[in-house]
Image (cartoon, rainbow, N blue to C red; front, top):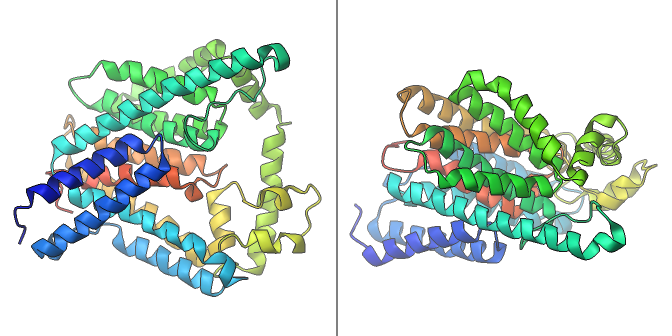
Length: 394
């Protein structure tokens, strides 16, 4: 029986907004916000004795993945070295926290707009960083790949992953939410421009995949305009971005060769630990036992691919249970989408969340973004949006 707890409710709302606003700028603030918000949610649920009213969609596949992760650590090459990453499983609680605390569509829509606003401000700052570094370094180095904005985060890859997710949500609102909020057009221009300047191709590919997905369900006839848009974008792009695109199709891309060497090495490790893997971070310990003529495995140790990384770390059990999360997620969204009327405004959150996950999974073919806490925390927030609001009884 839910009781009237206005103070707790207001505090929960503050933590949600603080989490969303800080997720693009500071992992410390976003983690603290999520931690306090999660505790407030559990406290309020206990106080109201409202456990039966809480919803746990995707609970079973997430629990199976958690179980597979624990089994992997127990059977790991070195338990003392592999158990620490288990704390990342707590990040899944963000998904349940959001969907159980965002109980009306107005709050959900406001949170998404704050997220897009934060992404826009971060994009502006990233563009400023690019031109600042370009101006400072041009006389010495000219136009180089070194000028890659990273916002206020640790790496440009994390920054690009966050911009990718926010950009997808902004696109979904532009296409499906009526009436159109024109300022979103400016936001998507800033976010995509900054994303381009990061020179992060896996994020580009993820964003492009999401764009094709959204356009297909919005206006199929516009699919054929995407190559034209890409061509124009290539022409107006700065020279480093053009070079990165050319390298992708040259067949001589050094970074792709590095990734293929890592994938081959990961396959060799997986063959020795096929069922439960060798444990999280085990490549740090076992890489010297495998051929590494290029030295890439010893240097990078990560597999730069979510699927291969999970196969190495958690084996078949972990990989299949992780894939089960996405299968159940897309199955739910499919049933939700077909139940909505053609012009229902709720389509933006359904298709936007699905497109964001597609972008994440596509980018994860070339980067182990599953282990990037900043990215997955925002991903779980976006995943929760279709389950939240006043219309859902899942």
